[in-house]
Amino acid sequence: MSAVPTASAAPARLAPFALLLAPFALLHAFMLGYDLLHPDRFLRGDRALERIELVRGFGAAWHGGDMGAFLAGHGIVGDWLPQALLHLAGGQYLVIAVQVALVLLSILWVFEIGLRLGLGERRALAAAAVYGLLPHTLVFPHELATEAIFVPLVVLSFRLSTGAGAGAALGLATLVRPITMLWPFVHAALSRSSTSARALYVAAALAPLVLWMSFMLLATGEFSMGRSAHDLGTNLYERMHKTAARLPESERPAKRPAGQKRAGLGEYLAFVAAHPGAAAAHSARDFATVGFKSGVERLVLDYLDLFPESRDALQSSESGWRARVEQRGVLATFAELLRAQPGLVLISAGSAALFVAFVALAVAGALYASAAQSAGARRLRWLLAAFVLYTIATAQAVDAAQSRHRAPAEFALSLLAVAGFAALRASRALHRKNRQNDQELIYSRREPVLGS
Image 1 (tube, helix red, strand yellow):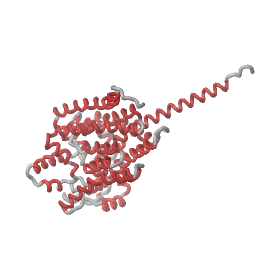
Image 2 (cartoon, one colour; image 1 turned 180 degrees about the horizontal axis):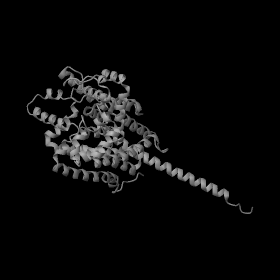
Image 3 (cartoon, rainbow, N blue to C red; image 1 turned 180 degrees about the vertical axis):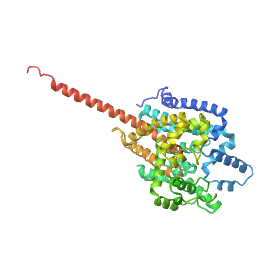
Image 4 (cartoon, rainbow, N blue to C red; image 1 turned 60 degrees about the vertical axis):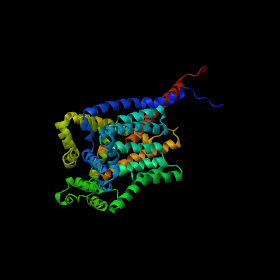
């Protein structure tokens, strides 16, 4: 006979979700109260001032403008349209509320991915909690930032694994930020799902972008994602100039007038070939930023506004901390910032040290798997590790990488870090057991034999 479910079975199954989501729901509710008292924090996200103008322009177009021309004239549509629709329906607090709901769901999805990874319930809860407490996860839902829409869609795609649903989630994410455009092919190559499931995944992942680019072809005659001041051509142009910051004046690329500040991929690669040392140094700074910078500045500078006199100076693209590193070097910039703002530097340095330990655990989790881990869990571990590397690699397509460019992969880092912590504990326990067995064997050989 089959077992009859008890009345307490359903509550028992729901207990982990309540245990996980209730504290984060309460935390974000308090943060929403803070948002009501400090409405300006909503516009502290990257390019938020530019995006709010698009949002308001969309509202005007909705009520009587040329909607087709507006949609086609402002870059890739997911960069601003989801938040524009929400803002039109209920203002900035509806935007925040929906973004908070998305982040709470993404925390839940990380827990469920952790179960598939073979972490067990407690460790999956720990991974989801770590992810929920990372600075980017905390702050982005309360800002007008693309990451608040983009990252939950990426997490959902991994939660759904492979198939049409997973592909559609990733395709919508790509409409927000196109950096995931190539990931479907990597995912399909590493997945061991059926051929039909992988084909559906890739097709569904590419469909939203192809539809958008087809609309752009009809509207503008150009099969593209849409031009903007932050598209690939603009980023490559700015990257060339930032890479050349420490080159002799005669070797720097000529500056172009407004409206022409774009570079093709061939032009950029030719510049890299001509200046490999400068390009490698710029990439090294990118890797260091993505790998060591925790993102705590998003919390203490942007959201809590603890160092208001330093925020604009540090975040300026022309004279901020990254520009100073490129022009003067790491040590000189660090010494200068330490003299000017020791409190902020100590917070950032302490957080960076913790984040390095976090990344080290994630590396251990990527490299070492439990012997009891299933084949499916091992493949998922490889996919998570590959997505982290993919995210770091695609940060090379922007002018200068920031910690926020790592945000899409932080759920994977959280899962791998907990897996790494578990692997290290298991290895230590096994080492201790083996040493104890060796000592017992040595002791037994030393004991006198009775009757001898």
